[in-house]
Image 1 (cartoon, helix red, strand yellow):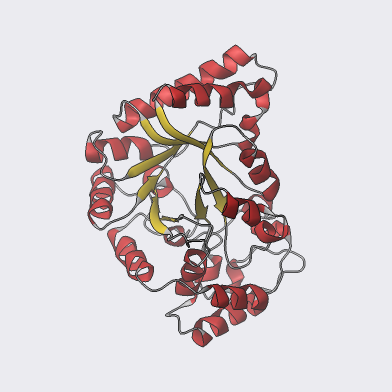
Image 2: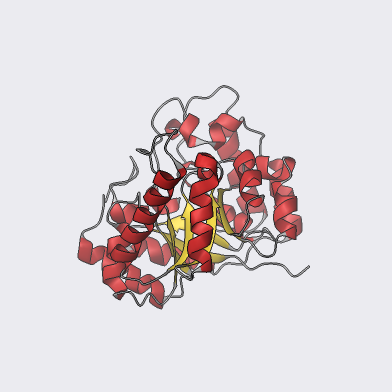
Length: 317
């Protein structure tokens, strides 16, 4: 099987909302964000990852390129938090249509390259009305590909069973053992028709910083041991840093097509581009890392389950 070559995808949440407790620069001004987007496109970033829920992010992408985005733009449906669970299929379809229309206006586009569900539950909720409507819009040419942003292996299997799936985004990093053990990677390797993007490579920035005090207090998690092991592996495998190792590990996975990294400054863009040109880990090196990293509880792998607000380094998501 030909190995996939993971590309760099610029995550834009920081460009649309104040994001990350350790984000010292804050949400950049409009013109700064537009300049960053244009520079990223000129430097060869493969895609922009955005969402209706990311505040001004879609609008800033639209303003940067006036609808002629030179790279693929992946956006996500509104989370539809206000849509009642007992809403009728017609109401669910209308909510999906409204979200798509708003994305088209903000991005200044007549069609969307790729649209993901922001909530995997919407694959089957409301008698499948939301997913069915996205399939109709895909067949009509309003959307190029449809997909799902997932949080867990259970959600991934749900998405992979959906008709018309063309894209899946999942959290993945050197500590995350779930995808292999629960059969998701095996399925993704067979599904060459599905593009796979990985986010959370640095686990809210914790894996890229030498600061155990930032870690959530979770039973069974020893931050000092994790960071020591990570840095030891980086040295043993001749990587420049823990961040370099984390990125090279994700890029070395044969089922991943793109890695999503959030940025809000041009300096961060330059640094991430420098890391990205380093070689990915080989399959054997990926196995060494997976076998050496401590096994952690699922609670650590899902920041939504952390006992206190996550402190994140937004440049290294």
